[in-house]
Length: 291
Image (cartoon, rainbow, N blue to C red; front, side, top):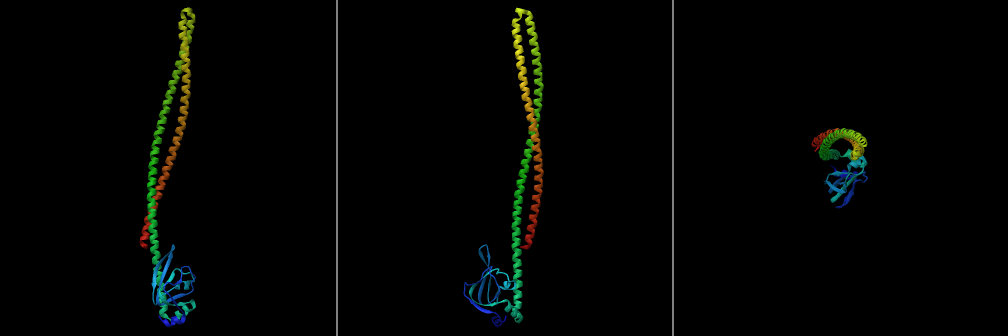
């Protein structure tokens, strides 16, 4: 590298230790070559300055902004008191024609930085993919466990619903049996009432001798009427029980249907979770090739 050509092509500047040459995000139209001293380069991330390079005599920096016209991607701060050559785009073009060694160093430096940047990006992407894969796998496992628990609960509910439906049917059978017994009681009450009437008629025919028998006949008729009345009330209650049981049975069957639908949906969710777990494995494999 011809130092004399550098000084003639550009502008020689001196900087003291701690001076900021440029900051990340600043507009940039010049590049710098270190003649003496050293310069530190920092990247700004999340409010923190991360040191990435220390440049010494013969090193250059800022060429990306000069070539692309983009803002500075990092911050340059003088480490030790330095003498620098500042090159504009025109002076850089002229120098490239005159100093083949410098042109080669710039191209080599650019290639090295691009390769380094690509490696850093690949490493960062690999780390991010591994983190995403890990989180995806953990969430898939947690979701799978929850789904299994839901499926088990749904199975228990379905079993309980089936048992309830069976018990309701048994109650309905009992209600029908009660209805048959009530019909028998009605018949007995009717026959008892007729018997009471006949006894009252016979007591009337017997005159004074049948008065006691007439009292008994009247009591029999009263008892018959009460039995029939109570039987009718019990019949009404039994009918209401049957109607309510029918409603409960319908609701239970509808609930069982919904549970079966839930079970089908849960199985589909399990399949989706398995797919997620497979994707997590694939992401992890891709990340391993990048890191």
